[in-house]
Picture 1 (tube, helix red, strand yellow):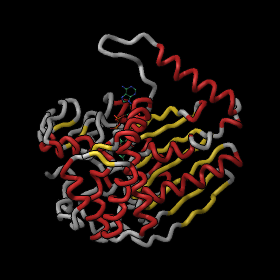
Picture 2: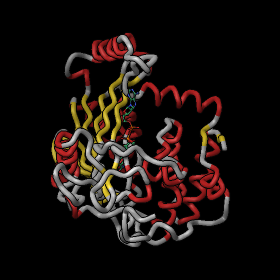
Picture 3: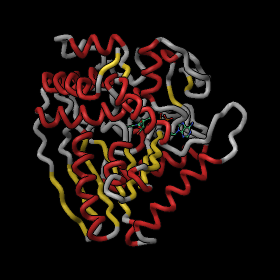
Length: 349
Ligand code: NAI
């Protein structure tokens, strides 16, 4: 089923509002989810609505959060999300970081006590749209074996970066520090497709291609990905005084409880370094240089990070966004949720 961005956003927002969110927050979440679907990151798009609806309906997200923003220094601040939807808190916190970086050259804003915030590209692009560099990292539930370990400790702890080039084009890099985000396994489950044997292990610690047998994910590049997820947990957990490591709350363990997650935005103003014009020139040159690199066999062209997603977004604007049929059926139905997510284990079927 193909839907326009506007239609998809309306369906998602309606469902989340029916589940209990204010129209303002339902709209805010829908905007982030549609952004992900439009960029082809379906793992963090409409597919998540039923999970959010169940958590909202069961009280595991604060429907009337009292957001609180406090500057702790000229370039530092804390945004307390009061366990409301992470998407909205992270967006508002980035708005504040942007203001501060415009004034002071740099801003670091911790976003604490939030629910899941979705695809981080949304937030770093807020900064790039204002001619600033955006970096964002966040905690995620423990489902990854640390290098050499046989049980999960860290989450899929993503890292996102966006930098503005000329003509409104950005480089946007956004990745889970696992070989694949958990949402990609969920996407494979939703389509009943196998996964590559490099993504995850089963309950015996053996690589598996069956998305339903996954018992832990693998970090990217062994000890190096493991080191990156540790860094993310330090910056968005320990630094903000939040639960960290395997104490980070699970997405699925108890949908009636708040998650208390953390995220950290870093915004850098190029005007305080090389100057905006020169910076944008450099970014645009990098994009061209990368596109002009001789492609390896099997590749048509080297893409700069975020290029293919931006192209998809443009194509979807014209042709609509493709949504899996059963997700569409759910979105247009009167059902708020089917009570399938409160299953205590992140890896349950
Ligand atoms: P991915 O594997 O689809 O892409 C990772 C990066 O590689 C992207 O920046 C993409 O532009 C780039 N890329 C991919 N193929 C490329 C190619 N051929 N040439 C050049 N660049 C290429 O992303 P992943 O790791 O699956 O993450 C998906 C989303 O999940 C992200 O938006 C992330 O923020 C989100 N996430 C959110 C979490 C949360 O708790 N809020 C937890 C984990 C992930």
